[in-house]
Length: 126
Image 1: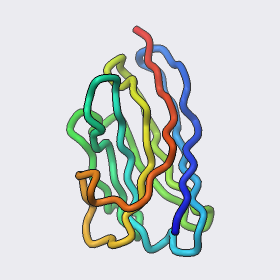
Image 2: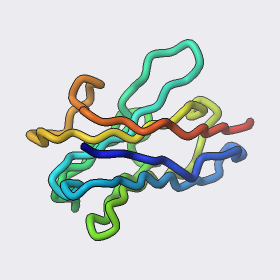
Image 3: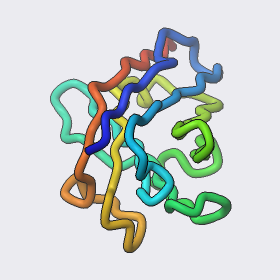
Image 4: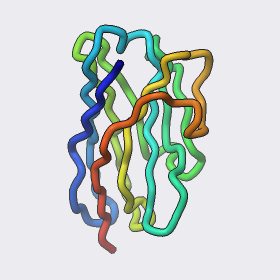
Protein backbone atom coordinates (compact mmCIF):
# COMPACT_ATOMS: atom_id res chain seq x y z
CA UNK A 1 0.00 0.00 0.00
CA UNK A 2 1.30 3.44 -0.95
CA UNK A 3 -0.06 6.84 -0.01
CA UNK A 4 0.83 9.80 -2.19
CA UNK A 5 0.65 13.47 -1.24
CA UNK A 6 1.28 16.20 -3.82
CA UNK A 7 2.40 19.74 -3.07
CA UNK A 8 3.80 22.76 -4.85
CA UNK A 9 0.86 23.83 -6.95
CA UNK A 10 -0.27 27.42 -7.20
CA UNK A 11 -0.87 30.42 -9.41
CA UNK A 12 1.86 31.52 -11.81
CA UNK A 13 2.08 33.80 -14.81
CA UNK A 14 2.68 32.43 -18.28
CA UNK A 15 6.38 31.79 -18.83
CA UNK A 16 6.95 31.10 -15.15
CA UNK A 17 7.99 27.95 -13.34
CA UNK A 18 6.71 25.67 -10.60
CA UNK A 19 8.04 22.51 -9.01
CA UNK A 20 5.59 19.91 -7.85
CA UNK A 21 6.52 17.32 -5.27
CA UNK A 22 4.91 14.01 -4.45
CA UNK A 23 5.79 12.40 -1.14
CA UNK A 24 5.13 8.68 -0.86
CA UNK A 25 4.67 6.56 2.21
CA UNK A 26 5.50 2.87 2.24
CA UNK A 27 8.62 0.77 2.00
CA UNK A 28 8.43 -0.13 -1.69
CA UNK A 29 8.62 3.31 -3.29
CA UNK A 30 11.95 2.58 -4.93
CA UNK A 31 10.38 -0.40 -6.73
CA UNK A 32 7.56 1.59 -8.30
CA UNK A 33 7.39 3.47 -11.55
CA UNK A 34 5.94 6.92 -10.93
CA UNK A 35 3.88 9.19 -13.09
CA UNK A 36 2.31 12.63 -13.23
CA UNK A 37 -1.09 13.17 -14.82
CA UNK A 38 -3.26 16.26 -15.12
CA UNK A 39 -6.93 17.00 -15.56
CA UNK A 40 -8.32 20.28 -16.81
CA UNK A 41 -11.99 21.20 -16.29
CA UNK A 42 -14.21 19.27 -18.66
CA UNK A 43 -11.35 17.15 -19.97
CA UNK A 44 -10.06 13.65 -19.43
CA UNK A 45 -7.14 13.02 -17.13
CA UNK A 46 -4.02 12.83 -19.28
CA UNK A 47 -0.50 11.55 -18.90
CA UNK A 48 2.18 14.20 -18.41
CA UNK A 49 5.40 12.43 -17.44
CA UNK A 50 6.67 9.16 -16.02
CA UNK A 51 9.88 7.77 -14.55
CA UNK A 52 11.00 4.21 -14.00
CA UNK A 53 11.82 2.85 -10.57
CA UNK A 54 15.52 3.15 -11.39
CA UNK A 55 15.27 6.86 -12.19
CA UNK A 56 18.03 8.41 -14.24
CA UNK A 57 17.22 8.83 -17.88
CA UNK A 58 14.39 6.31 -17.86
CA UNK A 59 11.67 8.89 -18.40
CA UNK A 60 8.78 9.53 -20.73
CA UNK A 61 6.87 12.72 -21.54
CA UNK A 62 3.74 13.81 -23.30
CA UNK A 63 4.54 15.72 -26.47
CA UNK A 64 2.81 18.79 -25.08
CA UNK A 65 5.33 19.16 -22.24
CA UNK A 66 8.49 17.74 -23.76
CA UNK A 67 11.38 20.18 -23.38
CA UNK A 68 9.55 22.22 -20.73
CA UNK A 69 8.87 19.72 -17.91
CA UNK A 70 11.32 17.44 -16.15
CA UNK A 71 10.42 14.51 -13.92
CA UNK A 72 12.89 13.23 -11.34
CA UNK A 73 12.88 11.16 -8.18
CA UNK A 74 14.82 10.80 -4.97
CA UNK A 75 14.32 7.29 -3.68
CA UNK A 76 16.09 8.12 -0.42
CA UNK A 77 13.39 10.71 0.27
CA UNK A 78 10.49 8.72 -1.21
CA UNK A 79 9.71 11.71 -3.39
CA UNK A 80 9.09 12.34 -7.06
CA UNK A 81 9.25 15.82 -8.59
CA UNK A 82 7.90 17.59 -11.63
CA UNK A 83 9.81 20.71 -12.62
CA UNK A 84 7.62 22.81 -14.90
CA UNK A 85 9.21 25.63 -16.88
CA UNK A 86 7.87 27.97 -19.57
CA UNK A 87 4.36 27.40 -18.31
CA UNK A 88 1.42 28.14 -20.58
CA UNK A 89 -2.23 28.86 -19.78
CA UNK A 90 -3.12 25.48 -21.31
CA UNK A 91 -1.05 23.81 -18.56
CA UNK A 92 -3.74 24.86 -16.08
CA UNK A 93 -5.11 21.72 -14.44
CA UNK A 94 -5.17 19.61 -11.32
CA UNK A 95 -1.95 17.60 -11.28
CA UNK A 96 -1.94 14.09 -9.87
CA UNK A 97 0.90 11.86 -8.81
CA UNK A 98 0.53 8.11 -9.44
CA UNK A 99 2.44 4.93 -8.62
CA UNK A 100 2.71 1.73 -10.65
CA UNK A 101 3.65 -1.30 -8.57
CA UNK A 102 4.14 -3.60 -11.58
CA UNK A 103 6.84 -1.34 -13.06
CA UNK A 104 7.32 -3.17 -16.36
CA UNK A 105 7.48 -0.01 -18.49
CA UNK A 106 6.38 3.58 -18.14
CA UNK A 107 2.67 3.48 -18.78
CA UNK A 108 0.73 6.42 -20.18
CA UNK A 109 -2.74 5.07 -19.40
CA UNK A 110 -4.51 5.66 -16.10
CA UNK A 111 -5.03 1.92 -15.79
CA UNK A 112 -1.27 1.41 -15.60
CA UNK A 113 -1.18 2.98 -12.14
CA UNK A 114 -2.38 1.48 -8.87
CA UNK A 115 -2.17 4.41 -6.47
CA UNK A 116 -3.10 8.07 -6.80
CA UNK A 117 -2.65 11.25 -4.83
CA UNK A 118 -5.39 13.76 -4.16
CA UNK A 119 -4.07 16.29 -6.67
CA UNK A 120 -2.70 19.81 -6.57
CA UNK A 121 -4.04 22.76 -8.56
CA UNK A 122 -1.80 24.56 -11.05
CA UNK A 123 -3.16 27.75 -12.58
CA UNK A 124 -1.26 29.63 -15.26
CA UNK A 125 -2.48 33.14 -16.03
CA UNK A 126 -1.98 34.80 -19.39
